[in-house]
Image 1 (tube, rainbow, N blue to C red):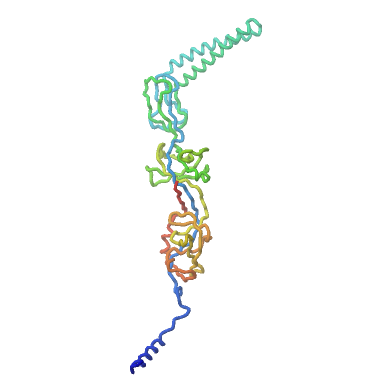
Image 2: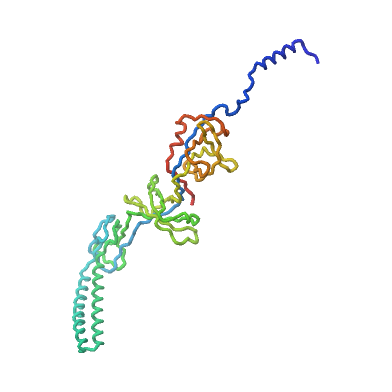
Length: 365
């Protein structure tokens, strides 16, 4: 092999330049500089699990007001849609024929009573036979029963509100002759509304009296109405495999009406001290969840965790955290265990803090 005269000086120059370069620091490597991350505290907060259902609303009490006797309507003592108190006279039928019947029966009763008292003394003195006394006693009791019946018919000429509530439209007019059992109007108690819904049997073990519900209706779509379960059916529907559940809902402003369709959330469980972190903090690998925490103020550590329910952009941590740890929510792609980190300005973490303190998750029905 031949070398040019210029080859040797050129090689020497290259070696000299290479020798002047700074040797890599053996201590340098990934993580020798701090990675900026966004971190928030893993907080203990209340969390609830709820079941989303559909149902309908019913009145607390609703009764059809009907006549118990034949007669002519003489007086209507209410305005349609008016609130009435218990015991108020709503209708009064023409009473003269009932009053006359009572007077007749009362006169017959007085005669029968007098005969009965005289016969008691006579039978004691054996002036009349016991069989005759029995006949007089039977007539007395029959007259007494007839009088009570006709007094009841007289009372039935006045029709009262069975409980306080809102009276409905009237179905008759004054002067109208009605027959027994004629529908006159309705009285509805709306101060409390009943929500009726069906719960799938697989959730039956988690339903109990006293549980809280929240419902919404199309008329007030942005508003929630709270209620409380008071009834759980003792049997399961064999066709649909559901259980009828009822709840009371306060309705003092009378905005909810019977027959409305309702969307309901039934609270199944409430955990007051659940550990919650933002969803973005969780990394899933081979079906295992983990996240980065910041130890000592500047060192990232990878921690395996177990997760529970997810709600509102947050995840419940059921194992691996105690609460209070700083958890990385942004910048995890650049991290490795033991890497040095520096925290981003506080305003970067603010979107993760602007979340309601009370969280809930909804399960499908």
